[in-house]
Length: 237
Image 1: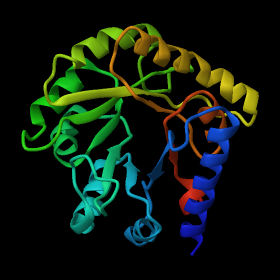
Image 2: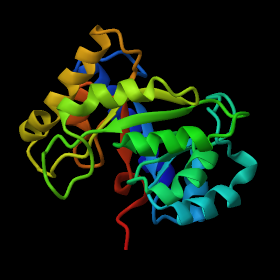
Image 3: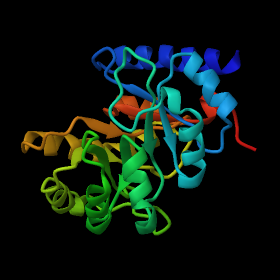
Image 4: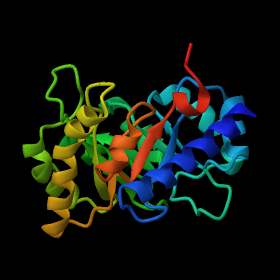
């Protein structure tokens, strides 16, 4: 099946790029971006061994999570079983924080203290803490979601006071460019900030960078999670 073949191809490329850029084997995770994709296609990806899926639109995601409930869990998944791990990767609206906190394992798009407080308040206590990444606007574009580099630490410190939130790292969506060198240039400031924070003692382990068109550059710059949609499922109509 094309989806199974695509996943196998991407995982092979991840292994190649890990070696090429001096990364540890298996240090980069594949997140399949399944927004606007059918349950049938997601099931094909599951059959190919994929467990982590990224969604941007809450109502669409809730339908999929319910339909795939027998293999889904909003807690952290065990890599040895067939539980799914759902990641919310779109902008988080205040009125949707309850459902996100109840149904997802990860949120990659936190950029506001009030939002993360709501996610904490609504996270069910029987679930593990909600994993979050702070979204950074590294392109400094008005149309891009996220905070500037200078605001990361204050927001991170606010998050660290919340018992049902676990700060895992940073995320960004830079401006699209076909040039590998330009892609690395865009990713580099966030990579530097990530390692700077680790040296300061922040317990973070995740850098969510890279999509279908630029994930080699992201891996070269230290990404630990690449978010791949079209290269797995094909172009969305």
